[in-house]
Length: 266
Image (tube, rainbow, N blue to C red; front, side, top):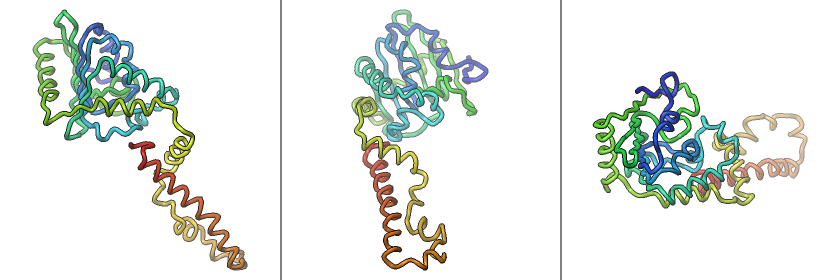
């Protein structure tokens, strides 16, 4: 079956039709967010075991783990701490997690479900990632192409392909503890200065190169050519410069701290 998350079925809705209790799950995905977990959290808790292989892990910052810009509907619910805590609890109990040693955002993703006892399989292969967008909970203009199948030979071949990557130590490495560390960080209470740094970074991250007193104070306004400026005494001009440049330097410093010391990309 075709699953394009638009007119021909949705990946998340299709997965929920299948039997999760006591089953085994294998996922190869370039992206993973806590809200991807949240969408399937009820079903995932019923699994017997699960394996996750993330193919772009080194590029997963805290922000991308929380959610992408397209997931703003979920981000605005402000329940990231709770979701991260529940996700970490589930991973500790039922999931193994590995990442590709050579990171790449592959378009070849796989979600494979093996039903317990019955020998039945269901697999989704294609562009679907373990995110709200990939599962079809958020509509986008991007083209998505996935094939859902429960044909035995095809699903077993896909699982064998997954197993070959999973078992290859040269291709995949265990990152379970690293992922749990990030989830625990998201779930934890943060000090006030962290919120301050984070807010400044998100407000000004696209303008950091322009935050320079030479560009802002001297060249942008032309105030030094005005009659008022030329009427000022030297100490008055110095005081004006200090009042402008000290906040700018402070802003650059805290934004640099936010970007380098773990606020967004630990």
